[in-house]
Image (cartoon, rainbow, N blue to C red):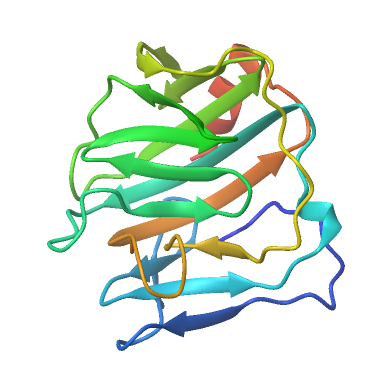
Length: 187
């Protein structure tokens, strides 16, 4: 999994599992990916370089499978929470959320992108998707935090993602639709 996160090289993450095995390496969309299951997640210690500004973009390749124990598995979690609400991608923070009407296709690679700039826009495979319910007002900002960055879980004990993740990226700017389409085409 090529994580495009700006961070000091000394701040490596560790694979962990809550009562199960840690994530394993598998064939990804762009090389190698991490396969999550059996309560596996990745824990990256806090670093201020992970703090997101008022406008940001998060992109990732996902090959989800349904979690038999949870219908809100987390792709990543810190101050910003990216998850699947059932089969729909959703972003949330500051007590607000925005969910796409797109439903993922199980066990197929799909590229997801969410852009936040006073509101949220979702993209799948480089194309904008309709937003369903959205409670953002435009006044929300992401605050600094000392929380770790987690991939595949909300916490060490809940909301585990099942499937594979590849090429997770966090940008400190709102990317354009053309930039997102270019990223999604990098197969």
